Length: 282
Image (tube, rainbow, N blue to C red; front, side):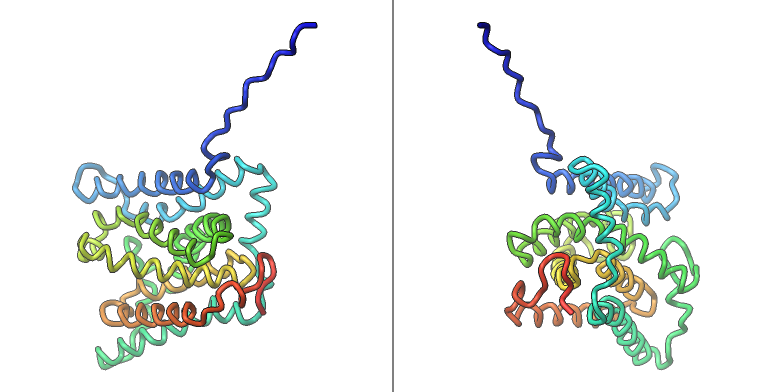
């Protein structure tokens, strides 16, 4: 009886063998392609609208969707979407996600008033780089849509979600470093980043890692709600990127966030005090 022909072993691509690595490569490729165009534009090599800057924020979301779909098809995308809209997280996490960035806005306004001798004009919150004064509500929507959901569906919703089983703080630090490096093109076309210089990248990286730890804490505590971290991230950027928070105020609110993260870490309860996936800690 002739031997049965053996099937050659199936070749699985990078997405199936190393999905998190594939995620980061796609996120970088998408965002850095836009960043490269804007760097070329900054140096006068090409003509391109600077508002493309906001399009680069969607690299993490595009990567998360591509990898989730490749791994599990529509079911993978549906599961991701369920966490995007997860709103039943308890009043505590709504207060954290929305209340604390608004409190930081009050801190920034107080520092502004102390330095300028007058309360800030609320219209200043409507200023957005490359878009002009588009009104505070529109600016808020832009920040939440781009650097809120555009980033958080990927960084926390995909990367942290897959890496947290090895320890959420460790995962948050790894993601923070890679998240910080993702911003590197900004140092070559965005004036406030250029002013920092590459030497200032180390300090910026520390602040990003701290932000990654805080957002990871919110994500896990809210039962893996992407909505909560997207709102916090978008609101924080809305405040910190406004002229109200320029200079000293930005430094002050950054210090507040760093101290907050240190308190979280020093509590030493980490995973013990945070509800398991899918069950928010109320």
